[in-house]
Length: 364
Image (cartoon, rainbow, N blue to C red):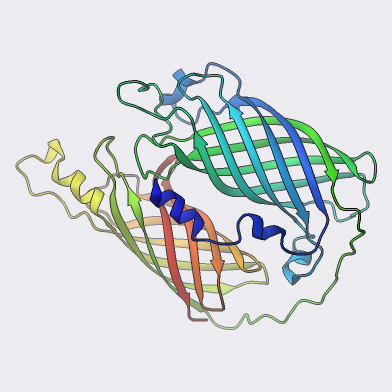
C-alpha cells in the first residue's frame, strides 16, 4: 500500500495546487444513484443492489492565465470528495478524493444551459476488501487503497448568478492496478443531481491570447523507465517489482496532440516466479519471461500535464500470460522541456496488469 500512496504523491499539482491560480471558485453538492457495471461475468454475484452516495466538489474556473486554457474553452479544475455505498456487505463503501478537469462543449460563457465532460484520476479507500477467509465473495478489490478514475457528462443550468442546477451521468472506477490480486475492479454508473454555488463575489474576466508558434518539423524522441510492484497472474503469489524500458518517436500535430510509435522491453519478477511455479511446466524448462512490444501512442497536451493513451502489441512473448494486445492510459507531468514523470495503468482488455510510475526524458 505504501507503493500505491507514493506513486500518487510523486506527481504534484493534481489536487489543491489546481486552485492556486486566478478564477471563480464554485462548490458542487450532488446525490449519486446508479448500478454496478458487469464488465466480467465473474462479478455477477456482487450486483445485488443500487449504489448510492454523495459527491462534494470544489471547482476553479480557469480564465486564460495559461495559454492552454483558451485551447480547451477555459476548463474547470476540480477536486471531488466522493462517498459511495454499494448496498452490498461484501463490497462495503468507497471514499475517494479525485482531482479532475471539466471541459465545456458550449463556447458561450453567458449561456444558461451548458454541457461539459469530466475526466479525473485520484485515490479511493474501500472499507471491505477481499479476504480469503472472511470476505472471499469480493473478487474485485484486493486492497484498502485503490486508484480512482472518474468520467462524466454533465448538464449545468444557471438559475441565478450564483446558483446552478446540475444533472449528470458518470462512471466511477476503482482498482489497484494489480499491485495485489484480486483486481477485477469495480465500475459504477450513476445518475447524479445537485446544485452549484459560486463562492466568489469578485467578477473575473477571460484572457484571450494568440497561440505561440509551434515546431512541427521533424520528430521528437523520448526515453522512459517505468517501474512498480504487481502480482502478475495468481492470487496470493505476492507482489514483486517490474521494469519497462521504452523508446518513442513522435510527431507534433498541433498545440494539443502528438502522435508516435514506441518499442518497449518488459521485465517482471512476478511473471518470472509465475513461470517457475507453473504446475503445467513441472519438470520442464520454462519459457523466457521477457517481453517486447510495439505501441502506437497519442499524447493530449494540457499545459504542463498531458493525457497519455497507447495501443500495443507483443512481438516477443513466449509465455503469453495475457492477450497479445495491450493498452495503456494515464497522466504525464512535465517539470521542464525535457524531464517528466507519469502514472499509467497497463491492461489487456478489462484485465489490468500493472500501475506504472515512470520517469523520462524528452530529447526534442
